[in-house]
Image (tube, rainbow over all chains, first blue to last red; front, top):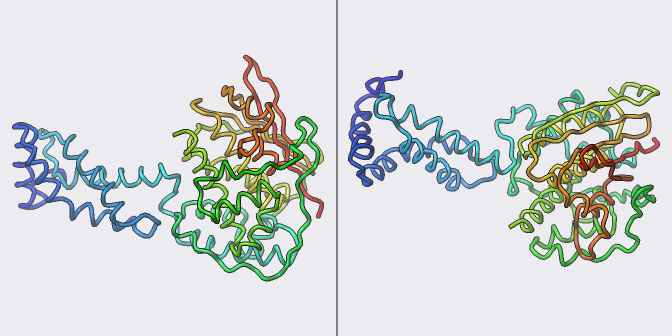
Length: 251
Length: 134
């Protein structure tokens, strides 16, 4: 499968176009190659759809991989361009997801466990009047603690758009506030100054959540109850907001 | 699955490259420790967030070490050595009003924190999270 002939007649026009581009410097040949192989990019990009990025965006990232493959292609190797380009396109797409901090290729069982997690956390929180332990979650979901931890990680692979709100519980949890003890080395800031100047760029919901967490000192569970999201969703929004703020500061 | 915690302090050490792709490794280790101690899911999340923010602030250094000191009633995380001078400034200086900086985040998510000096003037940040009484 390493020779061009193994890929049928379509490999021949590729070779001619590659020769024109690499030997003659014909840029239009490069454009023609990109055009010819966009269907390949589209089909590879579809595999990564449903992870929160639009298919169009994934295709664009994949197209960069294709262009890199065309540019790096060595005529002497006699490998079909499709064979050479596929790992480049896939690699570019994977790198894109990885750079966004998202894990990919999550086993279905873990995805399903992750879906059940939010509800289980809320049920147990209500039942026990506190945040459940990993072991309690494992018992509740008939899983091992390791699977629970992996399922939480699988959740961090979800993208912003797939973080759909789950219905909050109507029970008033009335949890004990656990923060606020005096620190031995660092005295806590007594007055919790308004965080408003720091939150300017964030959407209103995220600003509200950060104010509740870092200004009012509410727990994630208390916030979840107030805004009608799951605790896990609140956790993800806090993380992402802090990262966004940091990115904004470092720009 | 929470085995009875040993009466003495136990250590778990991890040295990891810095980068988002390594964060799951750190979170999983902290998760395993939380399971050992019977730390609540939300308290685990707090501890993970604290360590993640420190790693994020560690800047351009290639790797960082995480030492977890486990007792029956608390976990103490030592993160460092950290070269970044901004960490010292962020933690030791007075918190800037209206800013959601590292100090404000740590004040909210862990029970206590402090800074120890390592060799060569580098810093090790100490975070403590207590296991709530059940």
